Image (cartoon, rainbow, N blue to C red; front, side, top):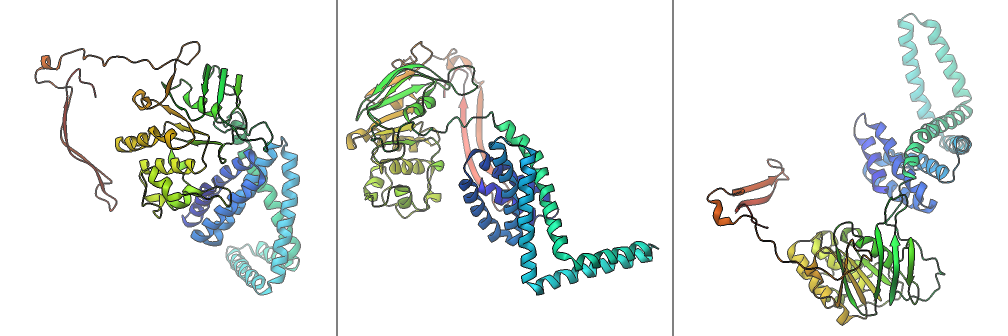
Length: 468
């Protein structure tokens, strides 16, 4: 969110006639203030302000500050259920404070004040001279007199100007942004894991875990995302969970990781301990969302309590990343990032590790490497592994396989079927293929300095009835 705010502020400064784009920066800051605490907005503003200042100077920095003010005011007022009167009062206070600060600054920096006023005087003199030439001598004289009076009482003029300006801008931002936030009110953050209901001092014990007649339905949904399911995961057990899209695999992962079900019971000996030592660790299918360190070794220990001793080299060797401790995480492939996320999870010595479709976004070589690590995980660690996958063949190394289906209890053993026989024999088709590629290639951004070859000399034939 802070990056989006910084980008809009930078573009509004460096691109000609794009100042209006700065208003877009109020959207991410407003959303942060609406859904999170004030400290989150402050942290995002500092990060965005530093980025904008380094790239676009003071103009970019002030753009971020303005976006944070308007978005923050609107988000906080909306979150607390207040309305336009609160915005007016808050903006009046903010305007008076900002105006007083600017007046105090100009009073202290006399040379800067005189320079600004001299520039303004020159502009007014030029405009009055032009008005005189078009026979508007009276209006020109009034302009010069009013400007001279304003300079004489400049502290009050500037105080009123800044106060009125901030009130108007705040009301415009409230009018536009509050409608957007109102529409987002009904969009739940469905994948956000709720904090455990118990005391944070409760002993951690995520396994063994037993689910009895558990169902889950997202707020506002017409049907259950996870139909009634009963299962158990024992200490040190490798359980694979398979099923088609929409069967509830990811929702089951959320329940195992601590989210409260809509109905049914979840029994554990202690707290889930999500992300804590000897608690529950989750590895997702998009590793870039979990890799936080700039170096491989840094990411493995990221977020661990102070004083925790970790054998980083051993963990990296175990997941197939030996010798890469000093590598930049930005240079890793998708499969390497996924194995790094797995190493970071293992650094917490989790009692329960949930791998949610970790092979979906990697190539075959990366899949093989990940499956090799997962298959021996419970033999080298006192960890229960729940591997959620689309592919039945990835479940072969598991102690048990559970298939989520449309059956009443939603949990069956994996069903297998013979490979389908082609409806039409290939030999009967003669010379007419369904698809034929001969010497096909493709180059991205051809003719530019960023040109990159993606395919070269690809040739194959697909006959009617072939399966790929």
